[in-house]
Image 1 (cartoon, one colour):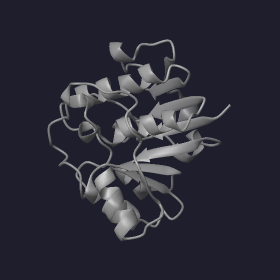
Image 2 (cartoon, rainbow, N blue to C red; image 1 turned 180 degrees about the horizontal axis):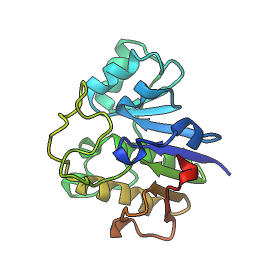
Image 3 (tube, helix red, strand yellow; image 1 turned 90 degrees about the vertical axis):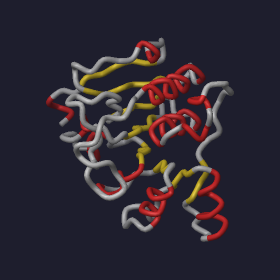
Length: 203
């Protein structure tokens, strides 16, 4: 059995010891997670995030998955062999949120875990919602991120897109980790998706 831990940057993971939590698993992170340590794979959709990731001291052995346009620049022109393309979407749709351009790093990171055919893909830090009407991100107020008092991001695209991953990879078991009061979206409620809450042992 193989397991990947996909690490979002929601504030619910603030007090979680990620290296301990991820022990024995492959790790897939998003954007600035390299600031806090190394992971096996990073997904960066914004060019500024790619620029930051490629010069990080913690990405020497990390695959950095980017959009096709950034792939051309960083891999073809700058010859950085760590650079890979994000996966193609497993379906075609007619809505705006179905377009690859409108998929963000979080949904692509979950898709990467599914495409890599892990038996189990665990999600941590995918909060979706804000608890205080301010942006929910561990890196808010830092370079390349929104200000600390910025409004929260509408999570509807994330819910929809990650729901598509769950739908199109029914043989993969997905486990969402969060605090006990977190509510799973109805769109995510499938036989191959389950919720686990943090306990003191997870911290």
